[in-house]
Amino acid sequence: MTHLDTGKYPAKHTDRTIPEKLRERILEAAKNQEISCRTAHHIATETGTPPAEIGRVIDLLEIRIVGCQLGLFDKSRDRDPIAPVEPSAELRRALEEKLANGRLSCAAAWELATTFDLQKREVTAVCEYLKIKIKPCQLGAF
Image (cartoon, rainbow, N blue to C red; front, side, top):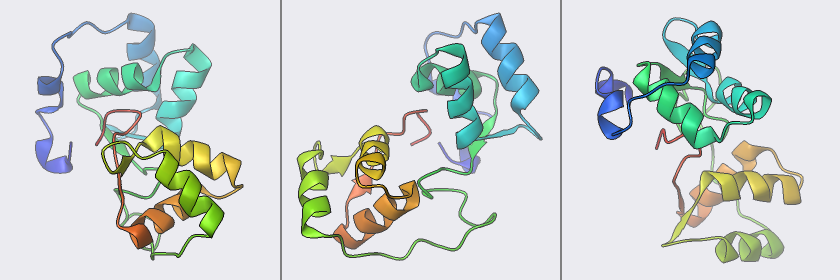
């Protein structure tokens, strides 16, 4: 959801319960009603909670996720826009094998970055070149 959806984040969830430990940890980490993608994933790892559940709680708390590690949103803050980059044949094949309905999931993009020793934003640059949308987000932001 975008910043235009502020105040409507909880609307996409039917289960409105929030585990108290997650509420406290997320509120502790949030600054100005925002939390970075990196911090949200760190909380998921440290608490053993799936990223999708962390994203659900973030939505219910009306906190905005910023700083996508793939560079897909919040571009104006501290990074240059991602320029398309032509992939190697090997990366292109691997990426195409991971497509579902013509899209690459955020989790698959992260996996490719690890496999090919790339920064996550470099995978996004390849997707830009190939005109492939990255979706869905592990946190449910897009």
